[in-house]
Image (cartoon, rainbow, N blue to C red; front, side):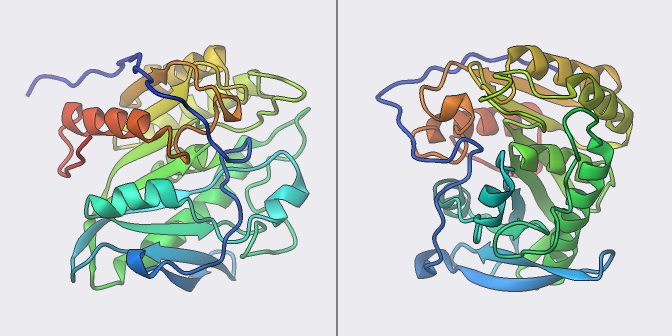
Length: 302
């Protein structure tokens, strides 16, 4: 088999009026209503390594399964108050896209955030002047992998066919969790991935970007699955320079995957393509192409 391409920078065509109503970190507005059409259920899932539990919301397609599934991870806002106010993370636009394609969706709220709560953010990197992204990755990975282990015990979920999917800080968390090589993981989809961004104080230039690049190079050899890195060109959290810096650090150290850069997205400062309805044609086309180019043992139509 010929080696798969490790980089594919794609300019995606955006058509129609683009407007989204999401917070600048890509977090949808709080909503607690249960959507029966998506078979929505709320669970308490133990994180054994921390001696705590997290809130996980599941969504399932019709039928009995076993379904392929994704662990879908939220971002991090720029203030503690906004992170506390997250509630349950319910990004219904992308959830419906996955469910309509036959995937179950598991959405954990990491420790310290929203409905899970706790005394501190388990994935905090500390201060921008001296960020510890390794600590942030470890804390987030514990919650994502606990969710995956819980999912593997569910009879209607296929333990050999699942993905880590994340928005912003959730994208970074997904890549870091993949470095633990969990069984059955097929790929990582990282949308607007990174940490340290703040468009008010450092538009496009997150703090500690060189440290993040070094960390990604360090974990790349341990990530055994391909990673889709998806950004908008005008992302004011993670600008074009760091998008390329981080992807190059990862791929040069042996990480597999593709970088997709969409044209400027005119809302949410370029950071909210994945959660929004208007961004759906962009990320679904990129995901379908990625599934085909990487020959994943799953299907995803655009």
